[in-house]
Length: 257
Image 1 (spheres, rainbow, N blue to C red):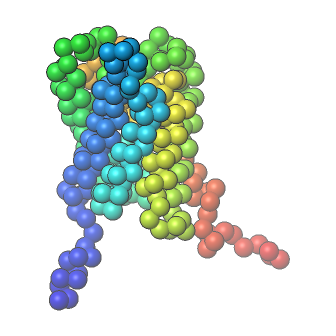
Image 2 (image 1 turned 90 degrees about the vertical axis):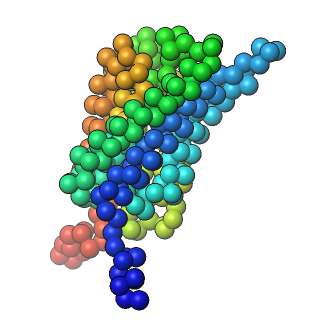
Image 3 (image 1 turned 60 degrees about the vertical axis):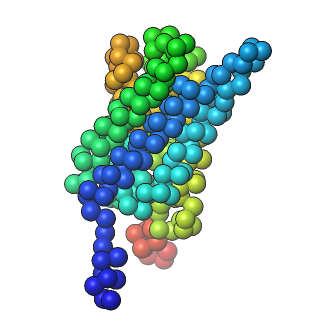
């Protein structure tokens, strides 16, 4: 009996973590980008759009994080995003040795998901990758509402930092137990509601790269922005979280304080 209990208490192996990150990232990219490609605009015979629109796409991205964080978050931490992994490493939440395997897994999972979205979309004779896109991110003429490079950099940086603060705060051992996936998913929904018109919302290099690989051209040429800004925003949050919100035992005691 003792050996069984010890086995149950063992920490997940790196292989288990990688499978969890692959599954979670795949579902996030497939669910979110799939919703944008398949369901955002569905025009009926009467000319009325029956699609889910920006709000539906935002909810799709948020829901993927909620369900997969509850499903496999206890195994890998539920990052599903290279920027999240970087922020968690810098905040001391994730071992440094896990960073590179996580990043590789997330990027590969994003590409696989992007390929599946394209495969399904190609089954519609009215779909054209050149015309309809693949839910890629962009700036300038490739921004949904024509926002500039500077605007996109600022939005992606700020929103990525906010996302990491939410993740680090809700997974803090001082936070209410069991609520983190819901809060994180809702925050991602909010982020998409803000940023879809700006950049089509990334805050996740794996999400951006996974579809840009297949779209190619300008989408792939602009994808560097959606590595740089999310990683930088996540790094700032990861480096400052413990300084801004120290635990009681870490607060220096001054004389007379």
